[in-house]
Image (cartoon, rainbow, N blue to C red; front, side, top):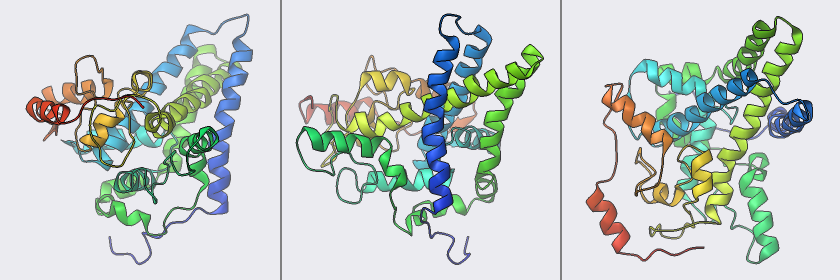
Amino acid sequence: MTVRGIYKYHITRPEKILTALFVFVPPVALICAVIQAWGEGVDFFYLSLLGIFYMLTGLGITVGFHRYFTHGSFKTSPLIETILLVCGSAAVEKDVFKWCAAHRLHHQKSDVPGDPHSPHSFGSGGWAICKGFVHAHVGWLFTILPKDILKNVSDLYEKPRVRIIGKLFPLWVLLGLLIPAITGALYEHSWNGFFLGFLWGGLVRIALVHHVTWSTNSVCHIWGDRPFNTRKDRSTNNFFCAMFSMGEGWHNNHHKYPRSARHGLQPGEFDLSWSLVHLCQKLGWVWDVKVPSQTEIQVALSSKSSFRT
């Protein structure tokens, strides 16, 4: 792609407003959902909608935006690539170009000046860590990124299918909200069903996926185990984050082997995203899957004692 200026990027006022809406409205909707269900419970149907769309969009981020589009951990067919792109976009964590560009910059500058979301940019001490946590978790979404950051994803722009589908990001966001809402309406044959589907399968799901994803940026650079030496970055493995994020919480492992399709590298480190990739590999749907050998892992572990931050 050679269009002049295509790689320039800065956060415009409309984008800041939309970001604020999708950052703050879903948590408010979560509170409303708890109030709505209090004392009455919630229909299993709507919890199922929440679970299904949480898995679809969450895996769209972990397997799609992260392991496939950002790091090239495996190769796949145009159909699977399209499904991953649509599901990841429906998670409402910015389009694939901005998401991958920011994450690649994070790996290039991890926990040093220039990292877009390091929690260690405010000095030492309790108050500095609190400010750093908020910044790494959500505050960085409103900061100015380098104008040429999209040069980090020139390879994505060069793929016509990714470029076209990626630029339809608003459509996938809209469908990710409307499909559960319409499903709820059909279930109850009422506007109440439409509202509950929109609430649970849409807004509540977005809130949960967002904060689980953002916890990898914040929690997994402050608290947890560091079995691997990853130079200056302070990435950690955090069990609780790993369980809810479908394997992304094995973050120290990931920083040691960024291109690995498998993040849970040691026994007991369950990685649902890897399980999906491995299943697709067995079915012949993905290939050229990158995973470090057990010998390589053991050598890296033996060269440095584990410690806790």
